[in-house]
Length: 293
Length: 235
Image 1 (cartoon, rainbow over the protein chains, first blue to last red):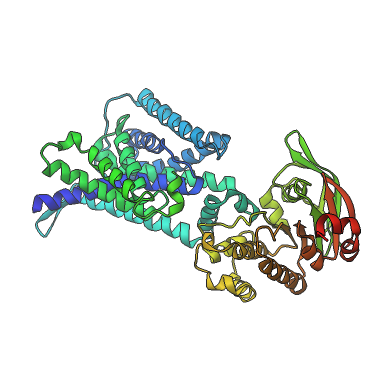
Image 2: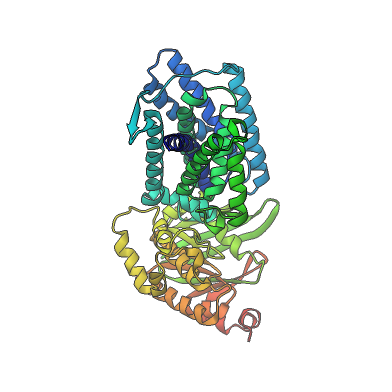
């Protein structure tokens, strides 16, 4: 029983990491209608920058804050320089473009920082709490807490502020958004900036366990995509809940089903997505309009 | 006094010129109708006036040039468009659609203003928390009108508001438009194919054919014009 609960808690923490990246993807999808395959690699660059700053002697917390700010600027810059050059109606072009960005950033990190894994150590204290006999690391708790705060802030901004209303209006109908006076280009830039910051938090949270190396975010990206599909592409809460389900189920499957183990566990969430998409194409929490993806 | 003054307006799509030297005036507080068949350039005129497509010529609002600005700038200057096909934000609720209409304004006192519009459009009040995409065509048109009015425009441009609506709904809609014009003094430029009902609330009309203004005059005289009756009034 203890082993089971510990696996669940570890799964929730890992799910929180997937959830953070998935939040970024859902946000970009909701504000610009684009599925950003480069989300993980954008976050990876930031993780490397945080490591580099820390390596140069900048305190870790300061480096992390700097990294998140840089992520915002970088995301906004990518929208400004590359994404807006392509028509929003060219959906396949967008897919190819974000894939290209994925390859470019992936190779860029290898070129600059090499292919040896690095790490900046623990973000949260390494202490272990004992809750009803179950050992829970502060790292797991902290990760979950960060993701909860993220979703709270995002939901507040999107649903309770004028800026959020404008962002949602822009996703809903770009032409009409311009006609009521919204600067739609600025909304896209903001959407990419915020999403990039949230994605970067995912990479920073994952860094102590996964180590930072080119390719580190690839499996996280797969899980986040899975979670976004599972939760319904336009639901923030759905993406996070689905991420947690995926994190827990892959952990439990790897522990309890002998022939799955740690190698095959990546297939578990994919099997779940398959089942969900067959039964409910709009995802667990998605609205029908998002089915077109 | 002239509120909207358009001179020598030319516009089109790429190499295709659609509008040729359009002149038109909308007086303060008046309702002006722009009649024309499909493809005459009615929607193009409104797109040019709201900065959605490039144009040449001069467009002045109360003496100040507004031509060639971006759509979001033109709204701030006091020109709001109710686009063809309504263009409501389907995924947003009725109330959110209206609130976002006031995007260019200060957000104070909006709630009281919402209630005013809900009194005029009780159907919308009942559905204020529903997604706009679930409304009927007529309700969406009313919503598009109120959304545009939330910006407190000096002039409201409407692109074929009667399109696709049942006759009884069209009558109701134009009745509301007339009330808004009288009670709020909002000037209107209405593009229509339904000439009968549009001329019934208008003071003046223009007829557009293949990108040229071919006729203009008082609404009453246009209603009595034989050529117009034959072409647009179906009698």
